[in-house]
Amino acid sequence: MSIDPRVALQSLTAALEEHLAAASARRGDGDPSVEAAFFAVADAFEVYEDALYEAYNEVTPLQVFDDEEDEEEDEEADDEDLEIVEE
Image (cartoon, rainbow, N blue to C red; front, side, top):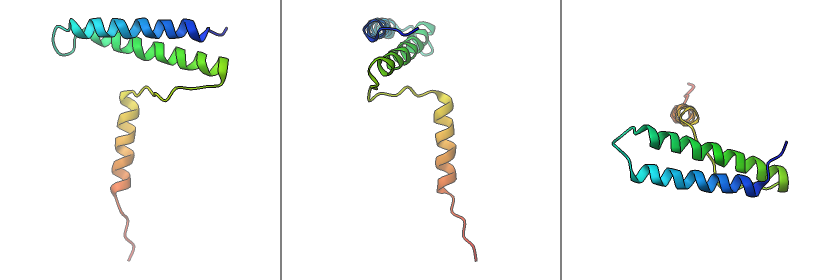
Protein backbone atom coordinates (compact mmCIF):
# COMPACT_ATOMS: atom_id res chain seq x y z
CA MET A 1 0.00 0.00 0.00
CA SER A 2 1.54 3.29 -1.05
CA ILE A 3 1.17 6.57 0.80
CA ASP A 4 0.35 9.78 -1.04
CA PRO A 5 3.48 11.97 -0.92
CA ARG A 6 1.30 14.98 -0.03
CA VAL A 7 -0.01 13.20 3.06
CA ALA A 8 3.52 12.15 4.01
CA LEU A 9 4.72 15.74 3.54
CA GLN A 10 1.96 17.00 5.84
CA SER A 11 3.05 14.48 8.47
CA LEU A 12 6.66 15.59 8.09
CA THR A 13 5.67 19.24 8.45
CA ALA A 14 3.67 18.44 11.58
CA ALA A 15 6.62 16.50 13.02
CA LEU A 16 8.93 19.46 12.36
CA GLU A 17 6.50 21.81 14.11
CA GLU A 18 6.32 19.45 17.11
CA HIS A 19 10.12 19.32 17.21
CA LEU A 20 10.31 23.12 17.26
CA ALA A 21 7.76 23.28 20.07
CA ALA A 22 9.65 20.64 22.08
CA ALA A 23 13.00 22.34 21.49
CA SER A 24 11.68 25.74 22.54
CA ALA A 25 10.24 24.24 25.75
CA ARG A 26 13.31 22.11 26.51
CA ARG A 27 13.78 21.26 30.18
CA GLY A 28 17.52 20.63 30.04
CA ASP A 29 19.89 18.32 28.24
CA GLY A 30 18.43 14.96 27.34
CA ASP A 31 14.83 16.17 27.51
CA PRO A 32 12.76 13.11 26.52
CA SER A 33 10.17 15.20 24.66
CA VAL A 34 12.89 16.69 22.43
CA GLU A 35 14.36 13.25 21.81
CA ALA A 36 10.94 11.82 20.93
CA ALA A 37 10.27 14.74 18.57
CA PHE A 38 13.70 14.24 16.97
CA PHE A 39 12.95 10.60 16.17
CA ALA A 40 9.44 11.50 14.97
CA VAL A 41 10.98 13.90 12.43
CA ALA A 42 13.42 11.21 11.26
CA ASP A 43 10.63 8.64 10.89
CA ALA A 44 8.30 11.07 9.09
CA PHE A 45 11.09 12.08 6.74
CA GLU A 46 11.81 8.47 5.79
CA VAL A 47 8.11 7.86 5.09
CA TYR A 48 8.00 10.99 2.92
CA GLU A 49 11.17 10.03 1.06
CA ASP A 50 9.82 6.53 0.36
CA ALA A 51 6.45 7.90 -0.79
CA LEU A 52 8.13 10.46 -3.03
CA TYR A 53 10.34 7.82 -4.60
CA GLU A 54 7.52 5.35 -5.07
CA ALA A 55 5.20 7.92 -6.66
CA TYR A 56 7.64 9.95 -8.75
CA ASN A 57 10.96 8.09 -8.72
CA GLU A 58 12.43 11.17 -7.02
CA VAL A 59 14.38 11.85 -3.81
CA THR A 60 15.29 14.86 -1.68
CA PRO A 61 18.83 16.16 -1.14
CA LEU A 62 18.51 15.27 2.55
CA GLN A 63 19.67 12.24 4.51
CA VAL A 64 18.95 10.95 8.02
CA PHE A 65 22.04 9.87 9.94
CA ASP A 66 22.00 7.61 12.93
CA ASP A 67 24.65 7.02 15.58
CA GLU A 68 25.58 3.61 14.17
CA GLU A 69 26.38 5.06 10.74
CA ASP A 70 28.43 7.84 12.33
CA GLU A 71 30.44 5.33 14.36
CA GLU A 72 31.06 3.14 11.30
CA GLU A 73 32.20 6.14 9.25
CA ASP A 74 34.55 7.20 12.05
CA GLU A 75 36.06 3.71 12.15
CA GLU A 76 36.48 3.70 8.36
CA ALA A 77 38.14 7.12 8.48
CA ASP A 78 40.53 5.86 11.16
CA ASP A 79 41.41 2.87 8.97
CA GLU A 80 42.05 5.16 5.99
CA ASP A 81 44.52 7.21 8.05
CA LEU A 82 46.70 4.16 8.51
CA GLU A 83 49.38 3.58 5.95
CA ILE A 84 51.04 0.23 5.41
CA VAL A 85 54.66 0.53 4.37
CA GLU A 86 56.36 -2.53 2.94
CA GLU A 87 60.12 -2.69 2.90
